[in-house]
Length: 446
Image 1: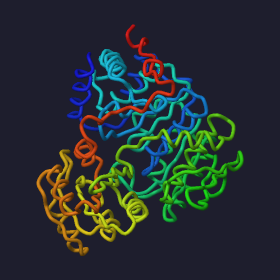
Image 2: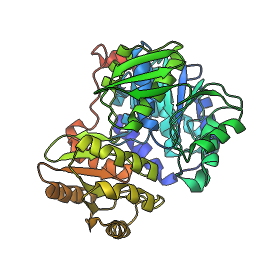
Image 3: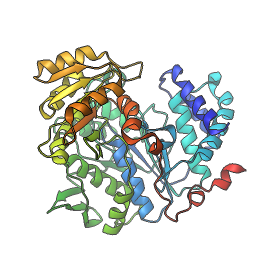
Image 4: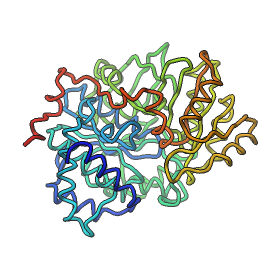
């Protein structure tokens, strides 16, 4: 397959929907020769913050001298965005080569078919292994125990903030949800790194960890972060303390940073130094996660799609926009807690343009607009994400701001418009300036 055909194949699998279970994925890995087996790895699980933690952890490992691959999901700009080596997005040739191998292996899967996420996960692991990475960071998709990513044997598991989300699939309380996410590791696992948990979630997370006999480092107990003056902060782990300069205004951003530092230190088995952390942070790109696009007006893109994520976003808005209250573009999926999300966002926005994302799971905008009105927010229904963005920009004006939130699907619709089509998948520069060296493209031409 060429790159275009590979993308069509992956995208076409969407019609198969989501099916839990590891039988198909295990068979696919066996057919591909168990890619990434034996490579030091970090498995990032949790409800919120997973992508940020995964990308930062990978950046710190790269900065510490390890050739590191990372797999995240979902994407905002394109399929290849999900896979990087040392901050460089997977090139089209590598994507096509790995997709071709995975496609050829599918007939060996029971039933001869795989889901979209299973196929993309296999493409990522196969491509990273073929490129000769020395470390891998993998973000779980949904849950953990039965997630397609649960085919790696990671010595380190990073648990980000756990909250109520996907309750129909994962359970209706934090204990159940945390238990599903911790299912990527065996009972008695000792490589756990537990990030910051909300007061309501912490007892449930502790109960889930204790029930499995797991142990490791806990945020607030074994590692922590303390904000200093200006952009300075001090991160403490069992390996010692390091002071770094980082423009991370929100408390939850700093908590994610500390979790990523602790996770990377577990892999390299030594303390990181400030230069490695600062160099790593400078290389991190995180599309659609509190992404500020400066202009007239400024546009903030964030994938907050559950109450905890919306509360974190609401905390960050005044920190990054000051006294400017943004005009919001909001769209949601039908299975989300709209009341909880709007309770968090309503106090920090001045008005809203509500629309429907292109996903088949998107909810009609009229109920969302009505709910915003009940919270004292003027809300207009605008057909189509692009038109909603255009009208929000016009209302905000040159000195104002627009906030796009409520769904990662909505961000996927609008990020190319905001960022410009020409830059949709611009890769960071390779450390040595040579993309072919970073991805060893010759390996994919054999």
